[in-house]
Length: 281
Ligand code: SF4
Image (tube, rainbow, N blue to C red):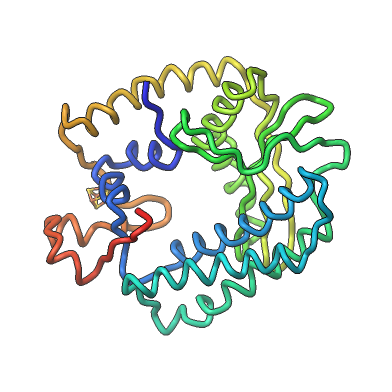
């Protein structure tokens, strides 16, 4: 059975056509909050991974190097965006230009207050599991209660009143079930809990959110996903047509491909005006 990553699965379940466009690398030419948040999150994760990888192998960690990795990651992502002709609106320019500094400052600060308890032993950092859609486990650890999976999230800001809603999103997220099941399969041990470490940069705050796994729920999820992934694979092999959603917006607003689908009718030449293609796919 072919398995797909949590983001591919989630997108496919939202709209198979959207997943198809993402897989081809299409994205909006004008970068918005969502894209800038993606660059920030990836850069922050790169710095944290350097920090935790050093700890895993017992090398002293240098905050300057880890912060620099985050800075470099943001800059190289931005260079790629510029290379493919992505643009930033005047309104967003200051925020765009601050991404590298914010990511590196965030890494420096989190390193002064490690949210992971000292009695945890790191088992893996950035473990890629090819059998599970190339999903990437940020960190796996042995704790007094059992094995846990940790996923780092980074946001520029978060009003305290939205924290419960944010927690709810992670509690039943595709990532939680997928990473827990994948790491169980990899270690041949059960995964006690999935942790989100949510780092909010301005003002700086760290939320450690534990979600204890229920084996029955994981089994139910796995059974459902076998069906989903079989359908995705059939579509990939051309055995079924690419479907489209019945709803063209989500909780974050309109789908970014509304113009591609309903104005350009998926004609790549017409799409070039508002969309561009990432080389990294
Ligand atoms: S606009 Fe609608 S049909 Fe097109 S990708 Fe988005 S959700 Fe799918």
